[in-house]
Image (cartoon, rainbow, N blue to C red; front, side):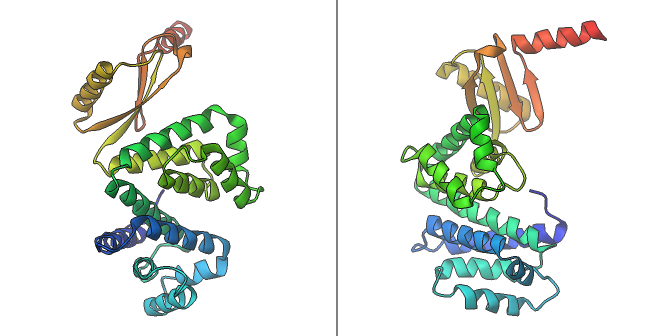
Length: 273
């Protein structure tokens, strides 16, 4: 997600307000997150409303009143408090307000997983789902179809995961499918993996291995990567025997290719030059 300076400031303020709201003992972070996502869906559908609440030249108090008039009694008071912070701020565009609100909603859901001690589980489930979608082009096409009804795609997600994943995982994946922002579904879900890792002040290393790694091998690899990058690393490992041997490791935009297939390709390039 790319935000301009004003929107970054607005997002920071909204996230601070979210932290304050979720700090109250009686507030359910998951409920707040889902309510905020319902508002994202509303603003995505209603272009005129999105423009009205995202107009930085209008009176902030008028924007707050508009949202409260529409949503009072339909969402909880904690959600309304966060929405006050969102629509009362100056965003660079209505579209960036929508992206920012979606980010705040996702954060609330991840806080819910964190508070229940399930953040690791949600992160791993998101990674697995991204790999399933990535490996099934027909599934990717069905979930990212711009013409198909959103309700049908949400149902497809529910049929895919059934009761096999945490509810937070399902809601997050459904939102990616509902609003992919022009990205592949696998990419969008991987962005959620990074957000989950970031809540634990970790970076994500995507590892492709020709064979299953033992617990000791994972620990050794994690330690080596943490020395290289100077920060804690979360490993997400998938097995792909097609790489022949070794590992391919991706951290951010950097790829460390120690696979047999990678070495052969490097040799071919050298011979061709």
